[in-house]
Amino acid sequence: MDDAAEAHRAAVIAALLGVVGTAMGVVGFWRVSDPALRAVQVGGILVNGTILLTLRGRHPPYSRRQADALFLLLLVPTVVMAWMVDAARAAHGLRWVPYEPAKLSVLTLAVIAPPGWATGAGAIAMFVGSSLIHHALLGDAVRARMSAGEPFAIIAYGVFALVLLGFKQRSYALRLELSRARAEKVAIERVARVAMALRDLANTPVQTLELIRQQLLAEGLQRRAQTDRMGRALERLRRLNDLLGPYQAAVIWDDEGRTLEREIRTVSRASRHRVELAPRRL
Image 1 (cartoon, rainbow, N blue to C red):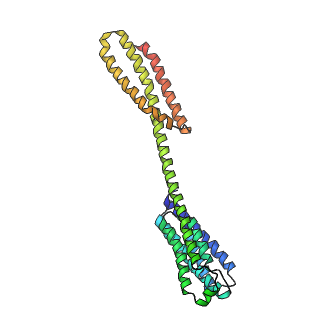
Image 2: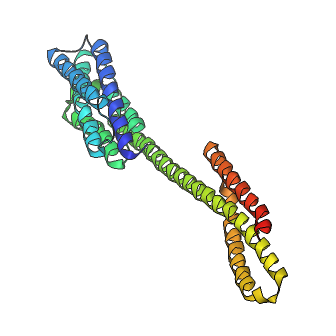
Image 3: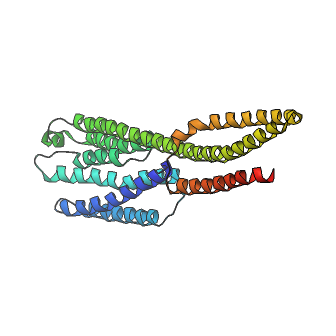
């Protein structure tokens, strides 16, 4: 799978998680939500659902830039909802743990991010940055009721998310290297099969020419010049056989290779039959 397909797949997963996560948020935060939050939640489901259906209806080839842009666009309703959920929880609770939706989101984004550091790091920065801005805008009375450790906890989550993102990008790089190595291996095997076919097809003419040369030598010295030239040609064919020999180790005879081998054997048997008839004609 290439980078464009991976980016498309990441956008589809983000859209699906957006629909599921927003629906869970509607149920989980129903008691603390107000009409504005509920309107944003409905809008988030519509945006994520529409983009999900659009992406699912597309066929290859995919556009990586478009998929990355949609991936980031899908996060905008979630960032707004996370802000509003934290504000609602702060208004309804005595003590509360802030930025939980943002913390969960950054870790999830590190896992599902598309290839390329820019998109993944930008997505993580959207949630961490919005949480830091929200924290700066909160009043002292609200901060006094939140659990200790903020805003350093959300920063720590962002750092760990970037570490996970690094491992994710490394896995993409390793997968790309593996795909290239596999393609090179397939190409080498195909070349090796052709080399083996050339070698096997060259062996029988060598035997035929050598037999005819020996018969010409037996007829007298008047054919010495022709037999010498034939001997030099045979030597070149033998060198060709030696050059093609090392490719044999690279061949894995699957169904295609066995078919090619059968064709080679058929040609070789026909050539040997001609060799047997050659002395009679001479």
